[in-house]
Length: 519
Image 1 (cartoon, rainbow, N blue to C red):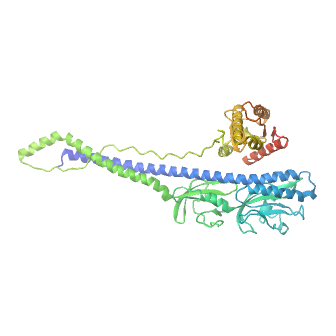
Image 2: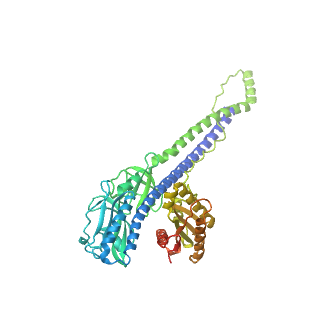
Image 3: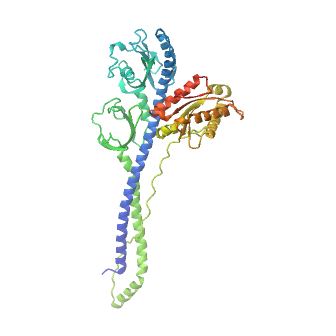
């Protein structure tokens, strides 16, 4: 018959083993869930950052094309048709300067509809070897049916839609290069004139996406709506994925799928030009991050069990000492000599589970110089703000380049800081002020109706007056502003475009003024 000490020790150790086993299983499951949640958040963050960089690039391309189209459109107003050639030549010089300062441009063009003019064809410039743009022989549009949007898409689609459009990736017929393009129609007295467009070599996007990486073997890839891979490290650019991995195409993100025999998890976001950006990581790497912690917990449990056994052994030894003394006395009296078996004991408690890994901070959303929202913050606000009750005010400093050139960039920076300070002073704390580039600012005046335009105009006048009546040693400056209420716009892109156009009209009117787009 076993001694009371051994029975008590065995019972306690069994209870500890059961408790440790349950706690370890719960801990491993919790660590697994936390590890997966953390990996999903890092995937989403990396995908959001990559998508923001791509969208910023697409926006720069759109602005380049829109700048040329806007100036051409204005110059065509009330122009005799026989002067069309002169306007095309002006556009040629302007477009070359704009394209030179736009990253990744492979070609740019302004093509005239043959139905409008049989003599003026426009131009097409190509930078295929990276040594500068050279004029290329233009495609003969008369060989195509311009009402057929399946051919000559860069010309026929914007003509058919009547608006600026990003086209799905296609291979140029003359250069045999995979490109994406942004194209804008141009009109003369409501009559279609032609198309202004920029083609971007998809290799430019490849370089951007190639740098989006997570863990050791994670990567990003681009796919269009027709399951063509625009970029994938394991698939040739432009190659169609005929068998899309199960689970990859989903309305939800992140998604889990299997590719080339490897289970992967990916987060994805749609882009404004119709493509999707994916950031994928093998499940083995995601699991490795939490499995290491799980093994550490298992070994910690063994150490706890060993320490607990030692403590309980000592405790039971002291607890049963009076009985052992009595038993020894009895054995001596009966001349018996039994050996007592030694058993490992355990504690009746286990340690607390480790805390989860700290989450990565989202990319800073404020401008370092002025303290207002930066471009990234503006994009986030634009996507989430209630446009139906918000005025967008786009403004910049008149002749800001002259201030930089004559007074220095340090003074120019101080002017921007003062402008931001004055904007904060005159707008409410609940309004949002953004510096979206250079001296260009956007203010979202929330909880306003379209009928409050007099209030908005009065604020702009007060701001202009305070900036002009400078008392801090800085140059007196004026501003021009374009104002649009979100209820007048079908979407965020149109909202921005109309505010930008209103500000442009204010500049044309002589600067130091504000214009409502609807007026």
